[in-house]
Image (cartoon, rainbow, N blue to C red; front, side, top):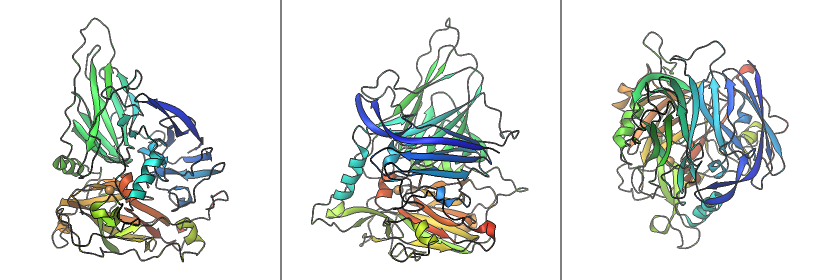
Amino acid sequence: EQTNHYNFNIQMANVTRLCSTKSIPTVNGQFPGPKIVAREGDRVVVRVINHVEHNVTIHWHGVRQLRSGWADGPAYVTQCPIQTGQSYVYNFTVAGQRGTLFWHAHISWLRTTLYGPIIILPKLGVPYPFAKPYKEVPIILGEWWKADTEAIISQALQTGGGPNVSDAYTINGLPGPLYDCSAQGDTFELKVKPGKAYLLRLINAAINDDLFFSIADHAVTVVDVDGVYVKPFDTEIVLVAPGQTTNLLLRTKGYYPNARFLVEARPYSTGQGTFDNTTVAGFVEYGGVAFGETLPLRKPTLPAFNDTSFAANFSGRLRSLATAQFPANVPRSVDRRFFFTVGLGTSPCPVNGTCQGPNGTKFAAAVNNVSFATPETALLQAHYAGRSRGVYSPDFPMYPLRQFNYTGTPPNNTMVGNGTKLVVLPFNASVELVMQDTSILGTESHPLHLHGYNFFVIGQGSGNFDPAKDPANFNLLDPAERNTVSVPAAGWVAIRFLADNPGVWFMHCHIEAHMSWGLKMGWLVLDGSLPSQKLPPPPADLPKC
Ligand code: C2O
Ligand code: CU
């Protein structure tokens, strides 16, 4: 085990895409940002120095942060933002995890440009449970706006309407040849050798869309999701929601001189709103002796943009490596049971009649009808100091407050309330949570991300969850373990986790528009009685609000 040090200078840089140049916040002038590489068990220390006008925080998405909640990063949840000219050192270990995760800014919409891969290798001498790859390649999917994204989201929040969609999807920051104006060098190219295995570390860092991903004429093997191995399976198309990561083994074909295969990603969208239905493309290229003829360019076939059955099938195939002999570590008994509705709603228009949401209202989004109101000080700091009054209340509802409907026919009252509410859990409580999609406009899938934990995905289904029947089919043997799960459009998902990590842990939809509208809440996990079960005091340089 070693300690890996990084300096992240948050600084503006000029970047040109789609024929226009803009100044964007970056880490060390790089876009996408630098990659963090660690071995399982290593310590990672990142000094973040803010040289831009915006307040900044960085989140290490999917890192368990065992007893290091002060390093988690969501603004006003575990820390106050790092202000211009200030710095903060994030210090954490990557214990019990191996695979691909990513880091991103966690304030406003700054993650549109501030993101990069986290690669966690197995401990020295511990092999992968699959053939050793010849090469490992991070593939990080994102979105590019020509306009300033901070202006876009603040305007959307003021008018109550939906934010503008992006101008392109990107692979490793590059939009590729299917967009107008893509210049040379704007395309992701992976040069491969024949007959080798490549480990593709696929990350969806896009802002508002689930994405299908495929390589023409090549099946890939899914071997890991969210930093946890799964039982390998082959597929030609991968679906990855914002906040999810998927490791894929690509086995290249035998002898293939000069062949090029398109790699494409395009959204899976179940919502009624507008979305960018364009495609980012790159190439897998076989080098080789030039005497063979160049094969015609092959294109992958992606599902229809709203192919919900593909989505259900794909997530249903994800199983952990556990077996009957070595079952997964799923909590067998449940101490606390929750049922949350997640979805869009409306809230009253503050500026008489000018709101662009349904019937002159403002768009809002909520969990159990509570749209999260961001506090002015960090929740974890308030809790640690024993000063929660006026900051948050410990009464997040266990069940929805109002009647709900998943069919798309709006219930009479779609208004949601605001609040800064947490669920308080005793240390080591085992939690079962069923999340049900609800809707006012139409159904929509929501990638729910939990900070500080992995959870087991023990069930999913379409329609309304039936508490009398559905639990009989829960998979407690080999469920996938992850940090971000899609609540299916017009359906539900059930998860379990053991609350063994004290702190305040954010849970939210990883679609940034929904998160901005309030689809977020938090869990406060109390200290246990042993010293090893307590959250240590905050570091001295923790920013102040
Ligand atoms: Cu990747 Cu709270 O998010
Ligand atoms: Cu959502």
